[in-house]
Amino acid sequence: MQREHHKRKPGRPKASRSSQTMTQILRTASFLFMEHGYEKVSLVTVAQSCGLTKASVYYYFNNKAVLFTECLLLVLKIAHDQTASIMSGSGSLQHRLLTVAQRFMSNAHIEFESMMREASTELTEEQVGSIRTAEQALHILLKDIFQRAIDEGEIAECDPMLLSHVFTAMLTVRNRKEVINEQKSVDQAAEEVIQLLWRGLAPRQ
Image (cartoon, rainbow, N blue to C red; front, side):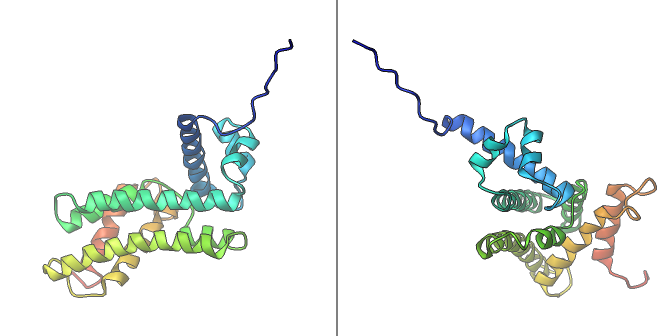
């Protein structure tokens, strides 16, 4: 009687390995997208950087647009959670804002809107919507923090959502070599940004 040989059907890796591989791909791809932008990164590049085959990356992410979307959602969630943790800590609002600025500015990356413009022709409306929702969550977090500071008299009356956008926009100077260079460190620039935000442009009395 012949013994039957059953070929193992290809399927998903074990759950733990699947989770680890997906996390590795997401974190590596996130770094590459933030460092080089959308157009210069391919799934082949991501696979090589992870030490995986192209087929492995395609197994988890059908195309670059899907991977890009998941990466931005991850990056925005990390930014949201880190900001929430810092802003709920001790110290003055000014000190906590400085910590957020230093954390954000310590990592050079492509400007967010530039990446979105590069990717716009390949992203679906649903993908763009999910990214914008995650981005908005960060601004809502900051808006609520600024509103509380206004209510408590720690800062002047203003539009807290506008202040949220102004604050995050100011931090993008990290990408400018004429600002961050051999003469000025990230921490020095971050402190000047917060001082400017905090005191405004009025002459010191």
